[in-house]
Length: 337
Image (cartoon, rainbow, N blue to C red; front, side, top):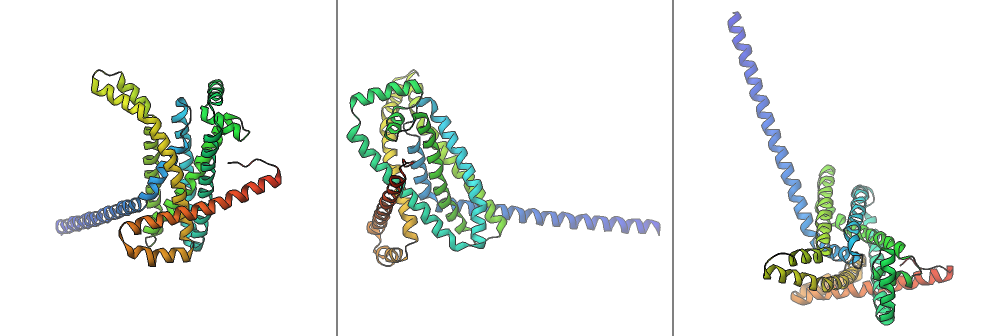
């Protein structure tokens, strides 16, 4: 009897262990499925934000253009840290707004769009001002002062126009890059949130965090590579072999042109992104684009909305510039931009 009872007990224990193993396997399978779902949702979110990512890359590369060579990477790192802080604020804020006041998302994005367009108009005015008034003698003076203060000549020239110290101007430039990143990151978070709005809260949070980290590493990693292209070129020129040396010379020669191009692309991106955010909140224009332009298909359906976004962005940005400058004139102060 005792032997039979022991055998029954051992059989019960074996059955229990089989049940535990089966439940563990099922739980592991479900966990794997959940992780796969999160990864898939993150991938979809990244794909939908690809357009904004391109603008984000151009804008951030443009923001560090003109910084002194030995400070390029520290500036990129400073902006990247600011970007991470932006996303640490935006991820929980996006979840809270989506859960309690979803109607607030569009107005907030429109305000951000207006700010981007304002910055775009300011940059265009600065470019025109620079071309008209920056002579050879002034450029030599800027280079001398830049060497004394450890900043870039472009910072000296821009700081003089704003009656600022060049060092303070470069710090303000970093702060401006972080502000711009905040708006672009907000749009990216809004797009990513839209892809997982029907998912549980914890999954929304996981996807947003994954997207935030991925875009920060991607954007600022590429920006760091872009701003150090000339160093790579010099390194290649010291290598044996005509091909490597020729490639190095090519990189060095193309770097200034790439930086100028990124500056132009970054400015255009401000109008494209800002204008799209504004148009999204303007029901008549948005409706006209959807009903009359999208059905055209082809190049017209791709180009006309971009032109509308740039046009709306330029008009709104210009109006904001006028209001801001009038406000500062009435107060007797200098505008921040």
